[in-house]
Amino acid sequence: MNLDYLVREPENITPNTPILFMLHGYGSNEQDLFSFRETLPADWILVSFRAPKETQFEGYSWYDIDFNNAENFINIDQANESLNSVLENILKIVNHYGLTDSKTHLCGFSQGGILCYSLALKYPEIFNFVACLSSYPEEKLLTDIVKDKKKLERLRFFVSHGTDDAIIPLEWGRKAADLLYDLGCYFTFREYMSGHGVNQKNYMDLMEFFSK
Image 1: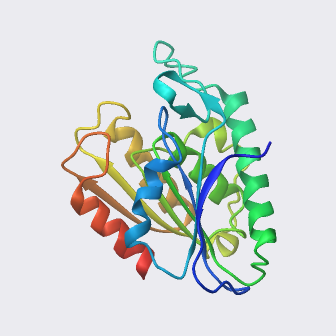
Image 2: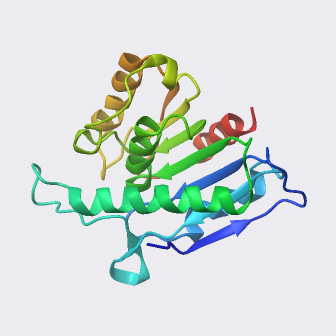
Protein backbone atom coordinates (compact mmCIF):
# COMPACT_ATOMS: atom_id res chain seq x y z
CA MET A 1 0.00 0.00 0.00
CA ASN A 2 1.45 3.36 -1.02
CA LEU A 3 1.00 5.88 1.77
CA ASP A 4 0.49 9.60 1.11
CA TYR A 5 3.16 11.80 2.65
CA LEU A 6 4.68 15.26 2.82
CA VAL A 7 8.40 15.66 2.19
CA ARG A 8 11.03 18.33 2.80
CA GLU A 9 14.28 17.84 0.91
CA PRO A 10 17.58 19.55 1.73
CA GLU A 11 19.52 21.34 -1.02
CA ASN A 12 22.02 18.51 -1.37
CA ILE A 13 21.22 14.81 -1.04
CA THR A 14 24.05 12.30 -0.81
CA PRO A 15 24.12 8.57 0.07
CA ASN A 16 24.66 9.51 3.75
CA THR A 17 21.95 12.20 4.08
CA PRO A 18 19.92 11.43 7.25
CA ILE A 19 16.16 10.88 6.84
CA LEU A 20 13.40 11.22 9.45
CA PHE A 21 10.02 9.51 9.10
CA MET A 22 7.07 10.90 11.08
CA LEU A 23 3.90 9.07 12.14
CA HIS A 24 0.99 11.12 13.48
CA GLY A 25 -1.59 10.15 16.08
CA TYR A 26 -5.22 9.01 15.86
CA GLY A 27 -7.55 11.47 14.13
CA SER A 28 -4.72 13.71 12.92
CA ASN A 29 -2.89 13.89 9.58
CA GLU A 30 0.50 14.29 7.91
CA GLN A 31 0.56 18.09 8.59
CA ASP A 32 0.79 17.57 12.35
CA LEU A 33 4.40 16.50 13.00
CA PHE A 34 5.52 18.12 9.74
CA SER A 35 5.09 21.43 11.59
CA PHE A 36 8.35 20.53 13.44
CA ARG A 37 10.31 20.98 10.19
CA GLU A 38 11.51 24.55 10.88
CA THR A 39 13.58 23.46 13.89
CA LEU A 40 14.80 20.06 12.67
CA PRO A 41 18.26 19.80 11.05
CA ALA A 42 18.21 21.53 7.65
CA ASP A 43 20.35 18.88 5.99
CA TRP A 44 17.87 16.03 6.72
CA ILE A 45 15.14 14.67 4.48
CA LEU A 46 11.83 14.81 6.36
CA VAL A 47 8.92 12.54 5.45
CA SER A 48 5.57 12.77 7.25
CA PHE A 49 3.16 9.93 6.47
CA ARG A 50 -0.62 10.04 6.41
CA ALA A 51 -2.26 7.01 8.03
CA PRO A 52 -4.47 4.92 5.68
CA LYS A 53 -7.77 4.85 7.58
CA GLU A 54 -10.18 7.80 7.61
CA THR A 55 -11.67 9.00 10.90
CA GLN A 56 -14.19 11.71 11.76
CA PHE A 57 -13.44 15.38 11.09
CA GLU A 58 -11.12 14.70 8.14
CA GLY A 59 -8.55 12.90 10.27
CA TYR A 60 -6.75 9.59 9.79
CA SER A 61 -5.69 6.62 11.90
CA TRP A 62 -3.31 3.69 11.66
CA TYR A 63 -5.90 1.34 13.18
CA ASP A 64 -9.27 1.38 14.93
CA ILE A 65 -9.49 1.86 18.70
CA ASP A 66 -12.26 0.50 20.91
CA PHE A 67 -12.33 2.60 24.09
CA ASN A 68 -15.00 0.31 25.59
CA ASN A 69 -12.90 -2.83 25.32
CA ALA A 70 -9.82 -2.80 27.56
CA GLU A 71 -8.80 -6.32 26.48
CA ASN A 72 -8.90 -5.54 22.76
CA PHE A 73 -8.25 -1.80 22.91
CA ILE A 74 -6.56 -1.80 19.50
CA ASN A 75 -7.32 -3.63 16.26
CA ILE A 76 -4.17 -5.77 16.03
CA ASP A 77 -4.73 -6.92 12.44
CA GLN A 78 -5.06 -3.34 11.22
CA ALA A 79 -2.05 -2.26 13.30
CA ASN A 80 0.13 -5.01 11.81
CA GLU A 81 -1.10 -4.09 8.33
CA SER A 82 -0.12 -0.47 8.95
CA LEU A 83 3.27 -1.57 10.33
CA ASN A 84 3.98 -3.51 7.15
CA SER A 85 2.84 -0.60 4.97
CA VAL A 86 5.03 1.89 6.83
CA LEU A 87 8.07 -0.38 6.63
CA GLU A 88 7.49 -1.01 2.92
CA ASN A 89 7.16 2.72 2.22
CA ILE A 90 10.24 3.57 4.30
CA LEU A 91 12.38 1.09 2.37
CA LYS A 92 10.99 2.34 -0.94
CA ILE A 93 11.70 6.00 -0.12
CA VAL A 94 15.21 5.29 1.25
CA ASN A 95 15.93 3.37 -1.95
CA HIS A 96 14.46 6.15 -4.12
CA TYR A 97 16.91 8.69 -2.64
CA GLY A 98 19.83 6.25 -2.85
CA LEU A 99 20.54 6.53 0.90
CA THR A 100 22.94 3.62 1.05
CA ASP A 101 25.00 4.99 3.92
CA SER A 102 22.58 7.19 5.87
CA LYS A 103 20.89 7.12 9.25
CA THR A 104 17.13 6.55 9.33
CA HIS A 105 15.17 8.10 12.20
CA LEU A 106 11.59 7.81 13.49
CA CYS A 107 9.27 10.19 15.32
CA GLY A 108 5.76 9.14 16.34
CA PHE A 109 3.02 10.69 18.42
CA SER A 110 0.44 8.57 20.30
CA GLN A 111 -0.73 5.87 17.86
CA GLY A 112 2.23 6.72 15.62
CA GLY A 113 4.61 6.32 18.56
CA ILE A 114 3.19 2.87 19.30
CA LEU A 115 4.10 1.85 15.75
CA CYS A 116 7.57 3.39 16.13
CA TYR A 117 8.37 1.13 19.11
CA SER A 118 7.42 -1.90 17.03
CA LEU A 119 9.34 -0.81 13.92
CA ALA A 120 12.52 0.00 15.85
CA LEU A 121 12.53 -3.14 18.01
CA LYS A 122 11.60 -5.51 15.17
CA TYR A 123 14.03 -3.98 12.65
CA PRO A 124 16.80 -2.33 14.71
CA GLU A 125 19.30 -2.64 11.87
CA ILE A 126 17.31 -0.06 9.86
CA PHE A 127 16.84 2.71 12.45
CA ASN A 128 18.87 5.01 14.69
CA PHE A 129 17.11 7.86 16.59
CA VAL A 130 13.56 7.01 17.68
CA ALA A 131 11.23 9.50 19.39
CA CYS A 132 8.00 8.15 20.92
CA LEU A 133 5.75 10.91 22.22
CA SER A 134 2.68 10.34 24.42
CA SER A 135 2.55 6.66 23.50
CA TYR A 136 3.39 3.25 24.92
CA PRO A 137 4.88 -0.09 23.78
CA GLU A 138 1.94 -2.34 22.84
CA GLU A 139 2.79 -5.91 23.90
CA LYS A 140 0.58 -7.44 21.20
CA LEU A 141 2.70 -5.73 18.54
CA LEU A 142 6.02 -6.73 20.16
CA THR A 143 5.75 -10.51 19.99
CA ASP A 144 8.79 -11.02 17.74
CA ILE A 145 11.14 -8.20 18.69
CA VAL A 146 14.93 -8.48 18.57
CA LYS A 147 16.48 -9.12 21.99
CA ASP A 148 20.13 -9.32 20.97
CA LYS A 149 21.75 -6.32 22.69
CA LYS A 150 24.45 -6.14 20.02
CA LYS A 151 21.79 -5.61 17.34
CA LEU A 152 19.94 -3.04 19.45
CA GLU A 153 22.95 -0.85 20.25
CA ARG A 154 22.46 1.44 17.23
CA LEU A 155 19.11 2.63 18.60
CA ARG A 156 18.67 5.81 20.66
CA PHE A 157 15.21 6.42 22.13
CA PHE A 158 13.62 9.65 23.31
CA VAL A 159 10.42 8.88 25.24
CA SER A 160 8.14 11.62 26.57
CA HIS A 161 4.77 11.63 28.33
CA GLY A 162 2.46 14.14 29.97
CA THR A 163 1.74 13.64 33.67
CA ASP A 164 -1.92 14.56 33.07
CA ASP A 165 -2.46 12.52 29.89
CA ALA A 166 -6.14 11.51 29.85
CA ILE A 167 -5.88 9.48 26.62
CA ILE A 168 -2.87 7.22 27.27
CA PRO A 169 -2.19 6.95 31.04
CA LEU A 170 1.28 7.87 32.29
CA GLU A 171 1.61 4.35 33.74
CA TRP A 172 1.33 2.94 30.22
CA GLY A 173 4.00 5.33 29.00
CA ARG A 174 6.32 4.30 31.84
CA LYS A 175 6.23 0.72 30.56
CA ALA A 176 8.61 1.91 27.85
CA ALA A 177 11.33 2.70 30.39
CA ASP A 178 11.05 -0.81 31.87
CA LEU A 179 11.08 -2.49 28.45
CA LEU A 180 13.99 -0.47 27.05
CA TYR A 181 15.98 -0.93 30.27
CA ASP A 182 15.43 -4.70 30.16
CA LEU A 183 16.54 -4.80 26.52
CA GLY A 184 19.66 -2.78 27.31
CA CYS A 185 18.71 0.04 24.91
CA TYR A 186 19.98 3.60 25.17
CA PHE A 187 17.04 5.83 26.07
CA THR A 188 15.92 9.07 27.68
CA PHE A 189 12.56 9.04 29.46
CA ARG A 190 11.00 12.39 30.32
CA GLU A 191 7.72 13.39 31.97
CA TYR A 192 6.17 16.82 31.49
CA MET A 193 3.40 18.77 33.20
CA SER A 194 1.01 18.44 30.27
CA GLY A 195 -1.87 16.42 28.88
CA HIS A 196 -1.93 14.36 25.68
CA GLY A 197 0.36 16.59 23.69
CA VAL A 198 3.80 18.17 23.37
CA ASN A 199 4.42 21.26 25.49
CA GLN A 200 7.22 23.77 24.85
CA LYS A 201 9.80 22.13 27.14
CA ASN A 202 9.03 18.72 25.62
CA TYR A 203 9.45 20.21 22.14
CA MET A 204 12.80 21.81 23.01
CA ASP A 205 14.10 18.56 24.50
CA LEU A 206 12.95 16.66 21.41
CA MET A 207 14.77 19.08 19.10
CA GLU A 208 17.92 18.78 21.21
CA PHE A 209 17.70 14.98 20.93
CA PHE A 210 17.50 15.13 17.13
CA SER A 211 20.23 17.77 16.80
CA LYS A 212 22.85 15.79 18.73
